[in-house]
Amino acid sequence: MTDFETGRHLIYLAAAAMFIIGLHLMNSPRTARRGNLVSGAGMLLALATSLVGLVHDGTARTWGLVALVGGAVVGGAAGFTAARRFKMTDMPQLVSLFNAVGGGAAALVAVVDAGQRPAGLGSISAGTGFVLVADIAIGALTFAGSLIAAGKLQGIVPGRPVVFRGARSVNLLLAVAVLATALLAVTRTGPGWALAGAGLAAIVLGVTFVLPIGGADMPVVVSLLNACTGMAVAMAGFLLSNTVLITAGALVGASGTILTVLMAKAMNRSLGNIVAGGFGTGDNAVTTSVAGADDKAVQSVSADDVAMQLAYATSVIVVPGYGLAAARAQSELVDLANTLSSRGVTVSYAIHPVAGRMPGHMNVLLAEAHVPYDQMLDLETANRAFGHTDVALIVGANDVVNPAARTPGSAVYGMPILDADKAGAVIVIKRSMGHGYADIDNPLFTDTKTRMLFNDAKAALNDIAQATKTLIS
Image (cartoon, rainbow, N blue to C red):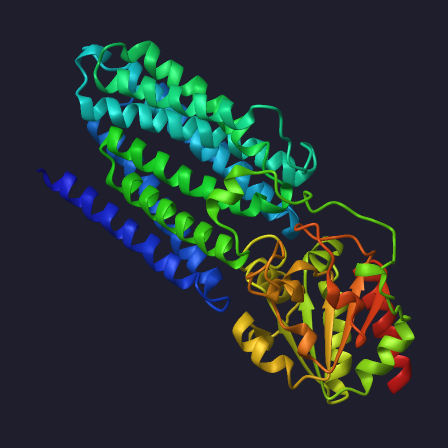
């Protein structure tokens, strides 16, 4: 090994270490921004080293290098612009689009590699054939599935489960087709058309796999596809003998898999149940009725009533949900919290692991509004505090505070929930009595100590804040 190659591998090793350090720093809101910068710097270092290596080895012609640099500049600018312009509530869609780009790029690397082998595909080893077909199949499935997932989250594709007769049989046949063509490629009995067949079958499977899954389950699916992207990138690293691609792909694949399992656990759903599809309403279902479960009366209140109850409380725990994120009402919420704190009321925030759209999503939204990190309580800490709290203020949350999760036979039985019903009083801000993703009634809304304020979260919180300021002035 020459000195140049030794130096290149050492730099790749440093970049891999920066990826790991960056991931570790992302485990806390306090250090997440620094972790993102460290990981990004590691990727920039790896890209620059690869470019210098191509020039040094003479494996890329002038126009190839121009295309490489041009693609990196255009792609980097597009990614930077998209990340700056996307709203925080649209971040899952952006992640899904990034997954599609990553999976598609990994599949294209395999296609180009297959076309450039001097001795043809008939001479490839069984191991290389396996890597080629796995890269193409996983990358193509991720590309198509991620585009459908982004479309569901954005409302371009129907968010409800799109189920057709024989859908599961079709998916099974497509999976068998992918495996059969993979076997042909590995045994070298028809690698050229087998690779093409695997890619086409995987693209169709990506579409038919995601369509039957409800929009409310999309964050879990996006996380699963993110793990698939990591595996495809790792496969591309094997084909190119690029250690940094293998490392980065393995890290993304492993972290994505862990996140997928944690999210499914937080929803008390098995991954198989989610992937099977047909569950939930797509989280966009809205009803205008104000009747409660089992025809029990719903007690509605005005903003002035809520302001009075909050102003005379000693402690308040806010439960932010997707309704808060969708209304982008975090600033109004913090304005109300600051008003209450100035009066001596202790205010904290209980955050469910899947509140908003993705794990950590609500933490970021509140941090944007300058909520101190020590006021954000995780599920276990919040549940210990609810029994000693005067008021639980629920803003746009539903299933994550549904006491039916403690009732055997319920669709959400066993799901970890925030025990808001154990607070002295409960106030719920919702636009209507519409169901959450589980499509079931929430008995908390008809509890005798619960008061409902029907309005958009942003307007309701603004009205409550103004009423509170008037009351205490």
